[in-house]
Every structure is written in structure tokens, then in C-alpha cells.
Amino acid sequence: MASNDFTLIILAGGDGTRMRPASLITPKPLLATYDEPLLIRQARQANEAGISKILISTNPKDYTYLKQTLSLYGVKAKVLENEKHKEGSLPALNFAIEKALTPKILMSFADIYFFNNPFPKFMSINKHSLGISKAFDKRELSFGGIVFVEESVIQKIVEMPIKNNTKGYRWNGLAFFDQIDRSVLKEFLKDNRLDSPEEDFFEYLRTKKKIDFSGIECSDFINVNRADSLLVAAIYRLSEVKKDKRLLTLANQTRIRLLK
Image (cartoon, rainbow, N blue to C red):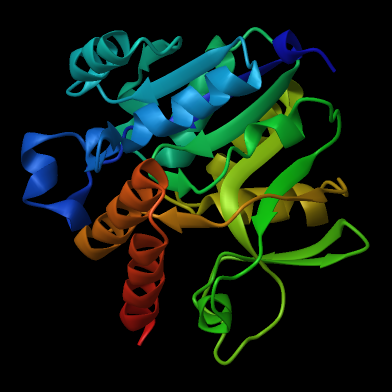
């Protein structure tokens, strides 16, 4: 598949309530991990992978700020002003899909810090897929957002925490699907809460619509949804820039302590 056959939609419109007070000053997607904002890192990785159509969906409040920052860093992407973010990420995704003009969609979240570029693995696929990552520590597999896979085919997607679970992969927020699945998303939103977890929609596609999903294994990642996870991501980024193994060890140790 050529890179212009799909649109990468990066959802970047959350309020960042768990990141306050920092997110009251700077939009959560633009909070910096050492030398570059979260959104910039991910959009840069998409540019480097050769993705030609990138649509960043954000709320009206942050629209201008995001456009200016992308321009400042020389990142190629379009920004969509999307009022549906106030209803939830799935209504926002529904609106963004409508604006995409490609038969395929690759979805991501702006607050994911990928250690290595995950996007090259999606450049040649043409079937429904979720990005999955091995757990850094087995305890992460009890937190929820877990994908169970057999022979690369996804068997179950579980959003809720699973006590003492040690199996499966972590979903890293990447999802590859068809533009026409928007009709199913609209159906799902009619019957479910607007703020339903994204995992529930893809499990709905898998179970109710009998659509098989493949698991695409990607690098480790950090879901930056709290101040302490932003700190850990910043240490990892600093170790990457400085090529310092001591900083990498420090980042790993800090990450482990936060799991306790």
C-alpha cells in the first residue's frame, strides 16, 4: 500500500485534566519531553516514515496554538478544529474520519510517547489492525487496555483492569481500519455512551461485525497521562539525545518505581 492510501488521524483534543496545572498553560499534546513536545515527536516520526496525509484533530481552544507549534518545528500536518472533542474521543474521531479523503484510516493519540518509530510497520498493510507492544513490566498487564493475540490474530480487547493478569500485549493506541467503518462507529455511538473507551468500539467491530484484527507489534511506549509519566518520558528522551546509558538506567528505574 502506498503511503497516500491512508490518513493518519492523531487525536489531540483532550482537556488534560490529570496534567494540571501544567495543561492549563500549555495544551497537553504540546507538553515537552525534554526538547520536543509529545505531539511533535509523533508527527515527526510519521513524517520520517513517509506518511503524506496527517490530520491532527484538536479542540477549538488549542487549534491556533497547535498550528503555530507545528509550523515552528517544520512538521508537515494539517490541523482540524473539532468541537466534538468536548463529547469524547470517539465522537471526535467520527468527525475527523468524515474529513479524511482516503479509504483507510490509521488512528493514534497525541499523548503516546513511542520509543521507536511505529509507523513504518503500517505502511504496507491493508487490513484491520491494532498496534500492540510487549509490557515493560508484567504488572502493566493488569492495568487494562490489553490485547490477547494468537498467531497474530486478535482474540480479545479488554479495556478494564484485569487483576493479576500476566498475559497479552498492551494496546498502544494505534488502530488501522476502513473509512466505511464510520457507519459502524455512528451505530456504536447511538447505543453507547459518547465517552466510551476506544477499545470498546474496536471490540464491537471485532465481535458484532465479525471483523478480524491483526496485531502489529511495535516498540515500547509510555501513555503520558500524568505528571510523573511525563517526567519519565522526558528522561528517556534525554537519554536518547545524549546517548547516555546511565540516564536510560535512571529512566527504567524511575518507571519501575512508579508501578509500585
